[in-house]
Image (tube, rainbow, N blue to C red; front, side, top):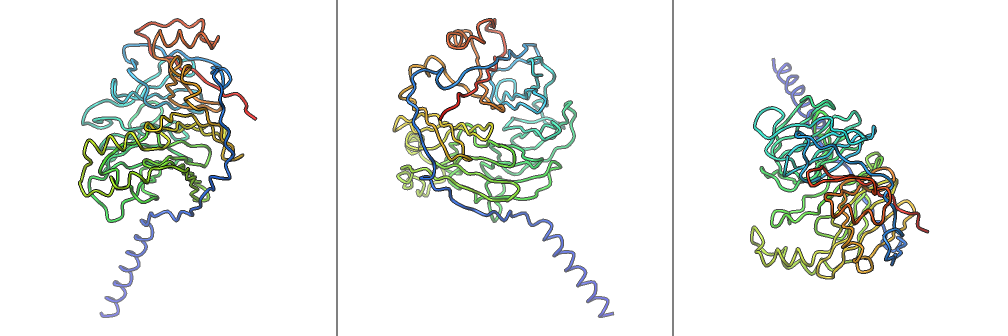
Length: 384
């Protein structure tokens, strides 16, 4: 009898150890630093927008009662050339248009039922164009035709989502239930099974959630993401599980005395200091092994564009101070990227007329105040 009990105990312990090993989700990430001095940086002091690049084509999004877009908060162009567009705050939907701009369908709606949500915090597509919609309390999976496939409740407040090779990466802004070991990025498979997590959670987010407009970008096996409170670029390779970091010299340490304060939330005065003096990338887009980044520091009046190729280790910076006359005329509202460049959004008649002066491809486009936005495909010139 004792032998049977011992046998059952051994089997029980084996099962527990097996389940533990299966659920152990910490990614063993190898980390390395990229020497900033190894990056060759050129400041392009052009004052003509045509020296930077050209709008190669434009797509006018069809306007219907069920496809009205207030603002484009995120855009993904899939392998077929279809556009998936999220309007987070106005229509609170994700829309699909074909490559000609014709409306196809929308995904989800506000509510408490299956496939419904309170708000949209992000969305992503897998290789089959299944759509993953990230709400403030649930993660929902739709097939490409809009059919609800699966949903789960989430116990964290998400910020950003993307997919690489059918793994889902979610950037976490805050936790509802505090786990013992907080991590910044959660990794799931397309059935929502947790397969990993990485990076220590930045507790400064609990004091002041002042996040960049776009944190994630991707290219092939690489996930690129910018730091929330530092002037830093991170590259995670999904195959090798290697994390590379490019730390760019800055004066953000001068804000450490604010972060070290014990109050749960920063005062309005401290928030203003962070907002004005933080030096970081405010958005990131990727195309054809290039990264297009927006450098921001209000205090130093730095609002520059970077074109960075980590393969060649070359960066071209377009200083705002040299281009501000053109930027005022041509406000670059970037919604996404494609294989050759970035996708700009033209929202109004006045804006379109300013663009027409520089880009002939737009001259025959008619536009009214009731119309949905125009997508303009901007391709950068080749720089030596």
